[in-house]
Image (cartoon, rainbow, N blue to C red; front, top):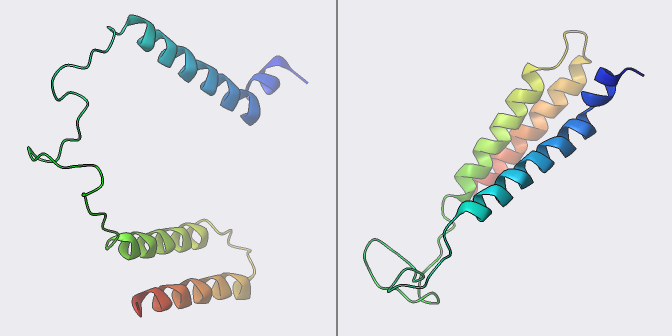
Amino acid sequence: MTASAVLYHPVVVFGLSLLAGWFLYAFGKAIAPPMRAVGGKLKTYACGENVEADSFPTAYHLFHAAFIFTLLDVVALVLGTAPSHAILWLAGSYLVVGLVAIVILFKD
C-alpha cells in the first residue's frame, strides 16, 4: 500500500481533521483573554428582556415541517443518485414508503 493510499483513507482523513480542529480550539483558548463575570454578561438574553431560565417556553411547532423536509430531501437524494441499472421496484418501493411517511406526518 502506498503512502498516499494510507494518507487519503477516510479514517485517517477524519482523524487528521479532528486533530486539526482540536489544535485550532486549543490555540484559540490559549490566546483568548480570561473570562470575567461582569454585570449581566452571563445572564440569559432574550431581546432585551430579563427572563428566568425556567420561565422561557419551548416551542416545537416547526419540528414537523423540518422532519417532512428531511424526508423529502433524503428520498430525492436516494432516488436522484440511484444508478440507471438499479432495480425499478426497489426504487419505487422506496418512493412509496417515503410518501406514506410524509402523508402520516401531514395527518398530525
